[in-house]
Image 1 (cartoon, rainbow, N blue to C red):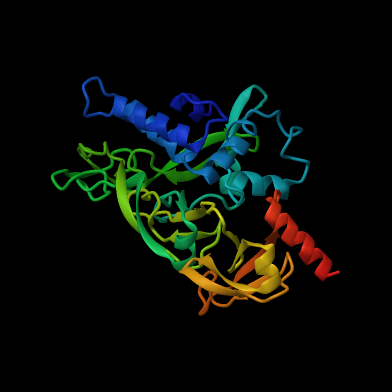
Image 2 (tube, one colour):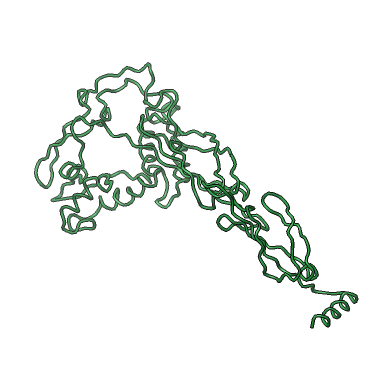
Amino acid sequence: MAKDYYEILGVSKGASQEEIKKAFRKLAHEHHPDKTGGNEAKFKEINEAYQTLGSEEKRKQYDQFGQTFGNGAGFGGQGFGGNWQDFARTAGGQGGFNGGNFSFNGEEFDLGDIFGEFFGGGRSRGQRPHRSRGADLEYQMEISLKESAFGAEKVISIERQTVCEHCQGKGHDSSAKLETCKTCGGKGRVVKQQRTIFGVYQSEQICPECEGEGKKPDKKCKVCGGDGRLVKERQLKIKIPAGIDNGQSIKLTGEGEAGEKGSVAGDLYITFRIKPEAGFKREGDDILMVKEINIAQAALGDKVEVETLDGWVSLKIPAGTQSGKVFRLSDKGVQKLHWRGRGDQLVEIIVKTPESLNRKARELMEELGREIE
């Protein structure tokens, strides 16, 4: 029967990635083999579950094939419409199928084993075991408008699986002795016979004891329990590119989760969120803002102070300026991402009409009204 990874970690199928990570950390700490009352088998099972559910891509495949497909009815169920080539592609590994069983004449068969070998999903003889690449991670970073415009450096703390420093990711330390695996005799592969709907089928598979290495250490690393990785918090200095916009990301190669025993690490994606700033609105590489002036300034003209990302500047208002007029301050916008130059700042003028006037002001306005009729 297929394992229920959600049940192993004690989370629901709708759990978020953060909830899955927290559940894994709690259970791993509780069952670590070096702790009193620890359980090595349980610890390994928990880690196996997290390796799948902790990766969004692997989790999606597991949700699609790990349970639903394996528990389906036979050849008439979903996923097979009578086309053997399509069925072979689904079962043989091209779609990332991780196994699954079905019943035929009262017996249970493993589709992954059967069709994986028949249709090219199996491993060739002598091939080294595949080690899973580390999972990619995403980090949401909030920055100010000025930081997005001109760039900056920030330090973040991120929790992730890292290579165990004690064993350098091998799963055993230098004092361990590597012995020939008794299960496979040092070949790294074992022969398995299996009854299938086509008859008795014999196949070669990676040895489950030594994981295809042919040798086994006589003792596992006392720090990581043999996995070669540990969950740790690390600080990273992030360089924010000048001109980065809201929702855009940068990739830090190799800064994701550590891979399995020497395999390549995943990548870290930093996605930026720009905090709103009163009085300013970013539109592409330009900055938009509104400046209020009174009737006299609009009619007679004036010089007013306008705030920009670089500080305050003087803006000349010509006589007769109408409400809604837009003035352009060249090169006062955002630095162009990966290019030279900057955008502009656009200043929209709003002529403010007074809501109440004293007696003298009213008389002056009435006189002005008569003059300009």
